[in-house]
Image (cartoon, rainbow, N blue to C red; front, side):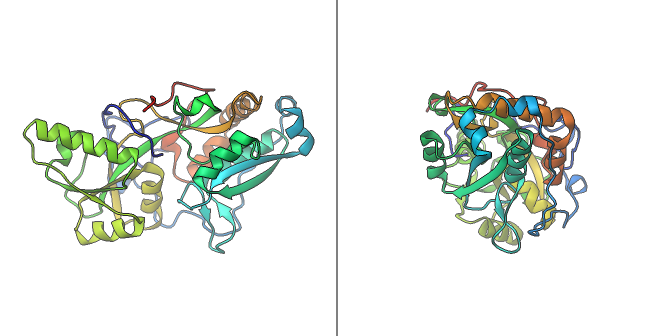
Length: 322
């Protein structure tokens, strides 16, 4: 998410297709490469999703605040702009699909509620949860100390970002600031990825290394074309988008992975209005799903097992205030 960060994170090399139960990060002893990528064409983008479902757990359903329980539906907001594999439109250009939708569905099932998904703008998502119009937000939301003033969080993924290179690129591994020295790197403006990249470049300059050539692209399609044409050598963006691109096209490789919070672990979480009594049931449902295995199945389905957490936590330390 677009939050400013104060410090740098040590890059962890990534094994893209690591699909192990409870794996919360990449194998530090292995670098990513084309052979470790998910197979091209493995993502189902049809409207007929055959979603993984969960059984109601009566004891957890009884924890849900009475007003929500009486309504019989969990109203979930999600950023409607479309960012595969998080939340996007299926091939019919109508059905909303993605890992965030699947995760929200599992939680609603476990709590004995119907999922009422409300795609919306990023700004309205927060306003609607704060006002009580939406019960929760499932939208790749990073926990921050500032957000914790108004919202409660139950974590369900590690927030990570990744360096991509063209499949035939000689660049095999990005593990430290020196690895980007002299290279042309694209990034989205105003993102935490940009902040990390700028800090790395400043560190290189201070150490007498060649500066990176930082370029900005507004659309992912433009940056993909630039990678393939050689106009840029690396692209730094959210890990889920990188692994999705790798799965459906296979023309890039992931050469480095790091925390979305710099040198601080960043967590993705379900967000609810602070103090409304919902965060406990959300947390308990997520932990039940982790234990039963449906959680792992959903992450595997979207090639995101690398972002799994061993347990869901309520309001963990968030990214520092800016």
